[in-house]
Image (cartoon, rainbow over all chains, first blue to last red; front, side):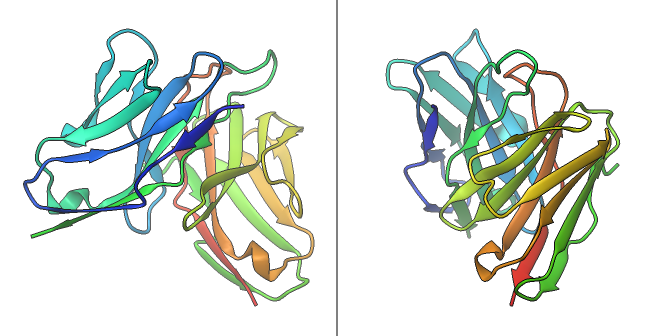
Length: 117
Length: 114
């Protein structure tokens, strides 16, 4: 079975500073990787995803992530954060499902990004 | 522009009550999911459904059941609510069977069991 580890439960950062949110996964087979963001009092929305190809993936709001197969990591980065980036960020992995069923994602425990002035 | 709607944002129930959480999607998605979100534990899958009347257990199905009589609607049922089921419940949907499918989430239902 696959699993996801988000190494930091909280990341405080000043506005306009760079940030990296770490994510490691374990799986014996190839996976698909996702980052979702949850703003206060809202559901989750997709930030970016890695399916195949280029290991650097760009998402919405200036975020990007790099897939590193040898280190089984998919860290999320932004060069300059804004107050509005304050949210909880979830890393997730998905596998190809068995025939006739659906793929289900396994989520990490989340990282709360707190951006202050 | 709301695509996944959860009928109740906040519910307060008493121990032993039967609780229904309703979720409706308007995207004609095949798959629907119920997750539970708790601080420090992230999202954990309770049940999912890949077709009408079809369901599969997720990682934490104990104490829950589901119903999917129509494609657009997926209900989560707590037969006898307990205090340890106090949580945020998130419904999501996706299209197709591929592992790369993106989930669309509802805004969540926060359940408090007293």
